[in-house]
Image 1 (cartoon, rainbow, N blue to C red):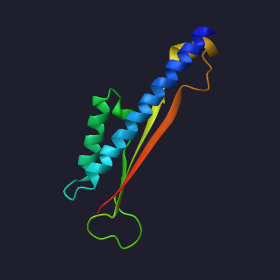
Image 2: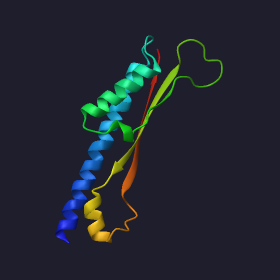
Image 3: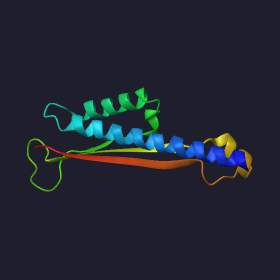
Length: 119
């Protein structure tokens, strides 16, 4: 029972760390996206680079960039929103030992959104 409690605390800490990383990555992506010379491809490449540098597999995260809100947006967007959803995988071998292979939890969907305004 103590082992399960310790593993649960470690998994919670890992999940919290990943949530903080994707929050910072979304913020950095939005910071890049508000620059007048940046493109959506540059923002996606930067987000992937930051995820890789943090030790997170970028294939589990997809970046969605919204560059305009409302009607009549011309030129540079007024509000930029970068969303980074991520599928966090729990320690599967330990869960299979506890549940006998039929665990309902194997992954947890985490997401972070950052919005920045062009001034």
